Amino acid sequence: MKLFGRAAPVFEPPVPEAERVPIGVVGVGQMGRHHARILSTLPPARLVGIADLDRARASALAEQHRTRAFASADQFPADTRAVVIAAPTPFHHRLTKEFLERGWHCFVEKPLTERVEDAEEVIALARSKNLILQVGHIERFNPAVMEMARQAKDPLFIEASRLGPFDPRVAHVSVVLDLMIHDIDIVLALTQDKVVRLDAVGGSVLSGQEDIVKATLFFSRGCRADLVASRVSVKKFRKIRVFQKDAYMSLDYSDRSLKIHRKRRPEVRSLLDVVIQRPRLEKKDPLETELRHFLQCVREGKAPLVGGEHGRDALELALEIRRGLRLHTL
Image 1 (cartoon, rainbow, N blue to C red):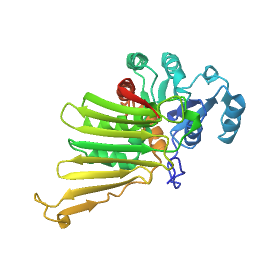
Image 2: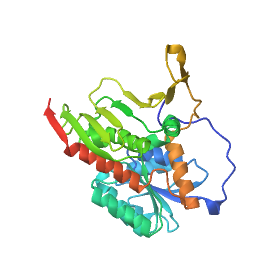
Image 3: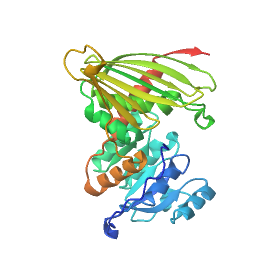
């Protein structure tokens, strides 16, 4: 199943023009083009423009989605209310700060910023201006992850593996900030607890950054999480398993499936005493669900599921893992 596959068309009543959110997209690389495509089709949104330093690329995408291309978000229409920031991470802090100061609600792709101090600054700015700041941790809107979060109760042990082939486009970024940060955010959401100790080991194989990292996190209430992220695998392998009292859950990101193993009775004498449940999950595109949620938050003024604080916490732990790495040159 494709991550950004087109869902089956669903009838939606039209949204009055006055209630649609005028929104622009800044940065139309790998993620930005998907944001633009989806926003151009969502009734609650009015895609007012696409901005990218590569004007030709922006123009081609704008023509495809019947909107306007700009060299800079400075040229967005005066009635713009919100913006998606899908530019490279080094630009996130400056752009988010600039747009919040203009009074625009901001959706920022992960990671929120490069430094925790910068994340704190934009969080405080959004709060002071009563603006929505949502961070693009897309896996939180995966239907299987959402169901797992509903079923999770005081996890004892979590094991997450996120492996994939090498991608030269992100060779300048540590695998911790590129891939592992997804599972860091999910583990923090599942445990609702603080990490008191961590151990991490990793190595550089094909780039100048860490290409493979294993981190073990120890939480204050006793949960332990083992995370592995690699971009030197031949095939993609992305799973997470959660063990808790009386049950264990296994989630496969590749097909968005979830299996829950539960005890039928207090004492297990055979496999017949264990039931395997496969919850019926809605087949929804996580990115579309994520953007719909952002638009709803903007329209209704409610706090997002993944706000600036969540993005900051995931970033802070990711950076702590990098600092604590016992690095091996392979």
